[in-house]
Length: 47
Image (spheres, rainbow, N blue to C red):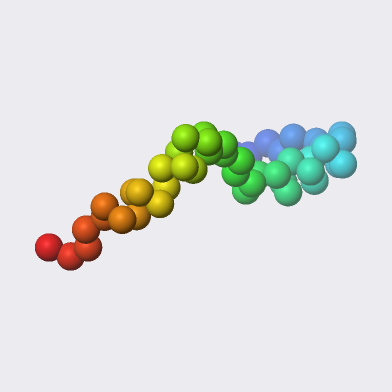
């Protein structure tokens, strides 16, 4: 048997959901932003 497809009644909302599907929103704490340059100086590359 094939999959049953749901009927879409609100196309505007459906299209907006497709647009928003790949968007990612995240927050960075102010303390993390201030500490960012210090993290870069202490990083070791290679062995």
